[in-house]
Length: 62
Image 1 (cartoon, rainbow, N blue to C red):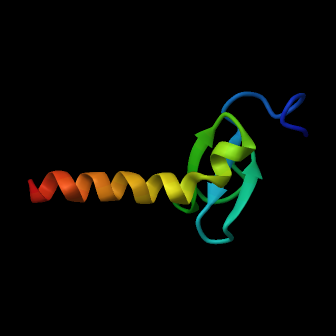
Image 2: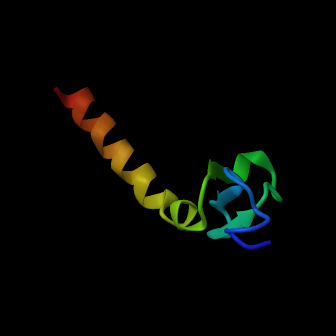
């Protein structure tokens, strides 16, 4: 499946164990972050999680 044809919207997941993007939720839900609309968004998942954690930590300190 390619991003433009068969994957469909919201069909990309980031696997936190393998550190790979999956097309469709292939692994156990406890290992996945998503869904994301594109492969690029899924690849950026760890950075987005880190940004959100930093923002939440900053709110806790305020």
